[in-house]
Length: 135
Image 1 (spheres, rainbow, N blue to C red):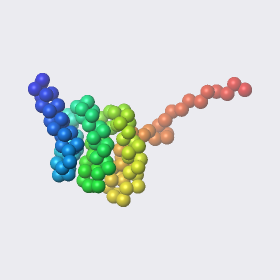
Image 2 (image 1 turned 60 degrees about the horizontal axis):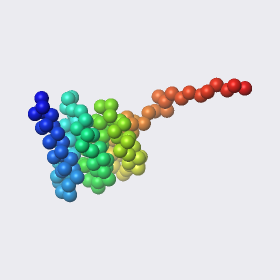
Image 3 (image 1 turned 180 degrees about the vertical axis):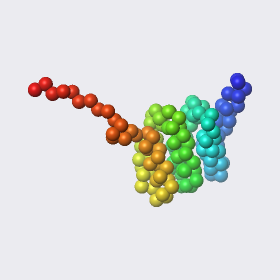
Image 4 (image 1 turned 120 degrees about the horizontal axis):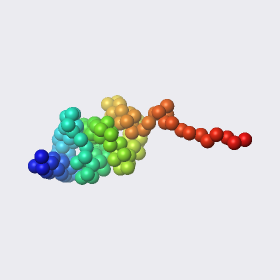
């Protein structure tokens, strides 16, 4: 079990290093591998969050390569769906997604809407209380 945890930590460190690197092919392969890994039912974003990966993923949303952007959006959606919305919100992901809502790529626009729907509650879902007037 300890060996498994160490392997996961080292693997995440390696992936995040590749995502932060200058090689576009390495970034594309690493983000696609991370996106595919989120499809595993046992995947959890803990190590990604612990090692500062949310900021790295957020920065990939600014890439020109749509494959990198779509894979980054898949990871963001997986993190939000896992219940770790706060990690995304605190790293400024919503602001970044907001700027992407009018992207020219329809697949990116669709994924941005999906991510935002997980991070921003619908108006109907928000319960507001209003103090009663004492007049």
